[in-house]
Image (cartoon, rainbow, N blue to C red; front, side, top):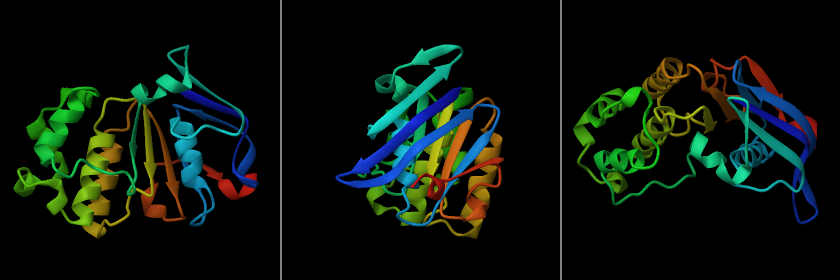
Length: 206
């Protein structure tokens, strides 16, 4: 999968968050978007995801030599961020089965295998609303990383994770990164993106 941005920019009212961004993301690399809090890295990530429409320029998506329209790109990506809400009335088991109805999991993983990979076996039948912030982030990450999508977007993925959970996250991404494009947004937390070999600084596009 390739994503190309041409003179892309986003503004709110009269304030430009970023602009004149010319960049290409290719599936043979993994990328990190770096920037301080409030710099616009999350806005850029959500623009790439098609959740936010750019104010200028264009974004093109190419999958297996076929162009994909921005309104359809959601079918080919998975996204994890601490601000994305979960269905808190669901249990973890129900969350997995719900997602599987419209976005299959990689390697045809079973519900039991996903739960084991997430290391939340003791809490599978507890409603998500009773999970700690760290457990909720594990659920977000697992549902995104284990989804069978060519594009994986992660916004500050280690938020609310302790050292043990960060090690778990790094291993999960490494184990399930084959043949996909991964883009991480981070505020210089190097343990969030050790698997990334390309960097884009949002500060360069103000």
